[in-house]
Amino acid sequence: MSAQTSASDASPLMTPRSQRVRELTHDLHKSLENTVAEFAPTDTLAGFARFVQMQYLFQSEIQGLYQDPELIKLFPDLPERCRVKAAEADLADLGSSIPEAVPGALQSPALAEALAWIRVSEGSKLGAAILFKQAVALGYSETRGARHLAEPAGGRMRGWKAFNAIFDNLQLSAEEEAQVDRASRAAFARLELLLRAVGKSPLEAQSV
Image (cartoon, rainbow, N blue to C red; front, side, top):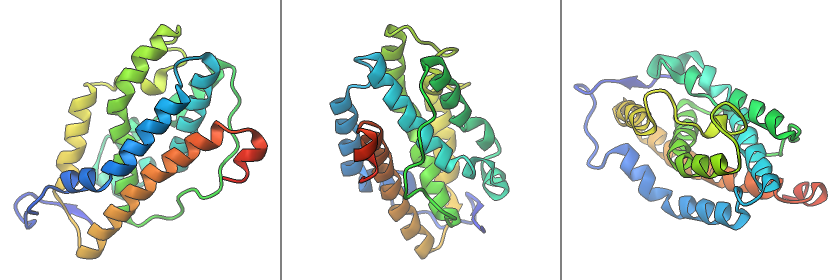
């Protein structure tokens, strides 16, 4: 892993990296939003439990990235941003079991790929604001059942802007830029696959 941050040395991109990735993943982001709406996770307690299972699966698959020493050099607060423990605690509150792993999890990503997956995870905290309010209506809170959806210390937008400020100023090669693009799309696709997997019966989930 060799990316560095330097606002003065890096050649500025015509379009900020974060904006390029947002545009590139718009279709997958929209598809994920539609799938979440289809499953209506906050309409029932059972539906919410399935949603938290999906969140746990995704966070557990990438939790190692949040502890990676090279990535922490770029994002010092990365370990505190991880939500896998919060999702696990929420499942316990809901009386829901830890779901079985779904084949196809991310394996040994390159630096640029890891950055893209983490960014998708961090971006999901913005949409979590609405889901958190809906979870509160079900009787849950930032200390019970909906920890992983709660507002991060310092605020959602502040944390997101801080992450993107570093992300946009990383010096990446042309190949690494391509890796960021591919990995960003892969991460969104994985989220949707996991949501559909937990929404199926055990037999159906095995065929996903």
